[in-house]
Length: 443
Image (cartoon, rainbow, N blue to C red; front, side):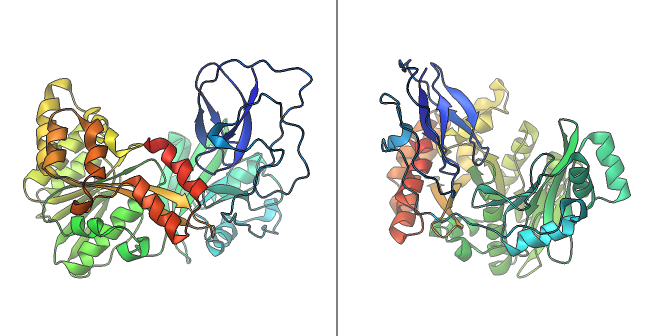
């Protein structure tokens, strides 16, 4: 089979893979994200043809080897020896100078905050890595040994937490220091201890700061029903939900109960009252906390994630009885939302859930975090406001038509992903290439 050059939809880096007669999943050589490479028909390649070499992003290279005459390039890349550099900025950081055997996790955290990174990865056999604008960037000049990785991973745990980690083999928790809050996961990876740390903002962002459409503020003013925030992992769903809660808290005298795993952002009481409950500490699980919340006189209930049928059923009951319910759901695109919810539901309950969902769903905010030209991130969002046409589609198993409802529902405040991305391109925030990469999942 011939080699093909493929562009990663996550980090926009290009890399070479061997063509296969069937669809394959590979890890991007730049960001390590999992990407799907489409099937390719066999192509005869002469043994004399030189292999294609692809340089990692942000590394200057000389002329590359000759490309095979019959090699195919996905995503309409030009057949040239050197790919043109994207105009999107690639952030660079100063390396930590402290030797790994003397390095403290607190120094790593301070360095990460100073460079506005989103995540920190500590793993043996690799340097400490920072994620900036979707890209993993080395923060130390030498890889960590197994002992160094374990020492850094365990520094934030007290003795009791270390015992629990040794027993359960995984441990999630919130860490707090003088500089901020962190969501931490410590685990075993091929027998070695490593950790991933998400750096959290010190305060909730506002809807204005996120530059979300006006329809999101309209959803925040709803007095009852269900609002869902959807998208794949690490697309800012929690940040947006927190901004909606902050908007309600600042403008309406309402009782808000959140059920989270773990609590990422702390809310201060403003016009109303916000009570935050953490799964495993303040309540046993999501559906137990949600069931208790119904007896605590709530106006708004926020659920970190819908993970099982019991949680979905109680959430819909709460929305039916006069509460505004906010929750997140992991899906790739908005027209998959009903199938995703019904995947938790027994077949005999499907009809009932469809009708309740049609009656209670206020709207859906589906979003993608996209890298900007200046090395930052912006939210591109697809908005579904549930009108009579959407209700009919939800009841009658035609959810693939929801995208048509969005396309024709501009006067109701609906926004398609293409419109949102085009607005960012017109604004100059992102490149047309970035828009094309994201739109692959919306065709």
